[in-house]
Length: 605
Image (cartoon, rainbow, N blue to C red; front, side, top):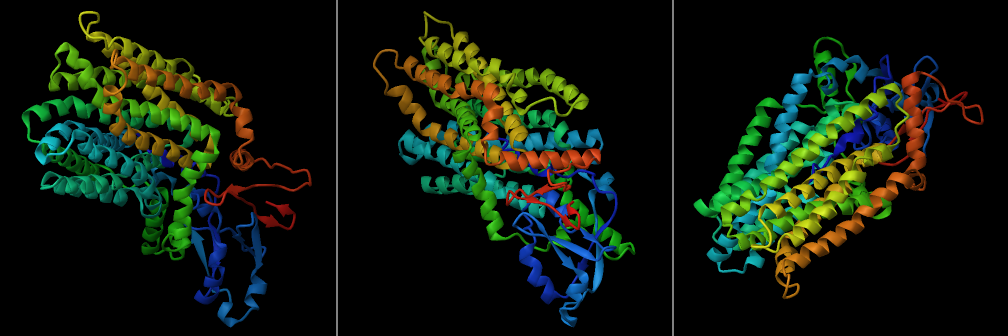
């Protein structure tokens, strides 16, 4: 499953650097004139870098700068503005509170123990969300018997939750940026838990389908949890935290069938939903008491309010300056960009298909394990325990990444520009083939006794799990490195593919293992999946050797290159001269994809 998420809102924090060393001010006008300028300002859903840098004025020169969507900032002369009329004259000066002035209260400055306490709670929350996606499989047979429906019809509840989950993660993302991580996560968990109740008390199957749909849609997933990582770690230090959360995302969907076998045997089907509610309530309580707000703009607004109350008038946070609310146009842009990048960007499309296919395999196994291991006389509980090798494989995959990330961190600290984004795929060159090997091995060790021992398919499923984890982690890591401020949308496409394809797998897996051929009926379906896995892993090698060329052809490449140059200027304090002798320092807007420069008397600065 995703960390949809994540993930990921990681990129929106990349511009949160301590590059400013003083207060910045902008003139406050009467409401009438202020309203006339409002459509010149970027929406509140745009990148935080723009939010913190857009309201820049030069009171000594009498010029004020407002960002425009044509790629430049308009210079508004205060003298000219004052001459417009008394209703439009300059009234006062507000001070915008910057990160550099209160960096110690932000998530980046949390002590290490506090960051990892928060991360462990987030791990628990993510486990509960992904537990909900797969535990339902153990209720399919009892539900079919209770409501007198076919087992295939009963699988609709599995499918619809996963498909709704895919879109739910994207739905919650912009609101966590606007309102904060804490209230959005609490609201999401509350709704997920509430929708378990009608499922547990259902008197007809339609109620369960509706409850599962809204439960999936209410799941915030990795869109918020990975955003919290971005709130607490600078971009260069996020890999270890991301790897940890990815582990929670994939592990939750495997822990469910392990405990689900016992639930199916010893408990009524209604307990399938009550257990989800208990797990979710425990996660919500842990989050309620142990996780503070981490969103940078929210913390800046709170600090600005505290300073005003302490007798320092005129200090405002970025959220207060930006104004209330988020436009529907901005929301539409945020929601549609993952789909656009999924279709138009070959890197996003190919790697998302690979990641989605890998996740769908686990949900295929939820149905295929029963006929495979029944050959050795496995009952419901034993089939559930057969998922333990997959869980072990996930931990092996996680551990295998640790030395790779440690090495990359050391290299990066010595020379930040020496590692290309394609270096994030290096370990995948060796681990991705394990998926194809594992599927072929699983297929032809499914012959059953006396030819094969039951441990053989479990060993190959462990290899599949190692590949699954590494594929998920590496594809997210590569997209973050490749797309910078757009990586939230890129990884959003990844998360969408994983959950959507997993939902589809819930419907095709049983017919796949029942209707192909007469002889080797269990072997050929896994063989077909192995062949597909071979095809979808080929792009990894193409991107590793040709990724730089492919990225150069992307419509985002020029913008991202300019953004990286601007960040380099900001960090080093050096100035970059253009061919015309102008100085460029730009900020990239995540929503519009434009570079916003500040026009001065000497050009752009």
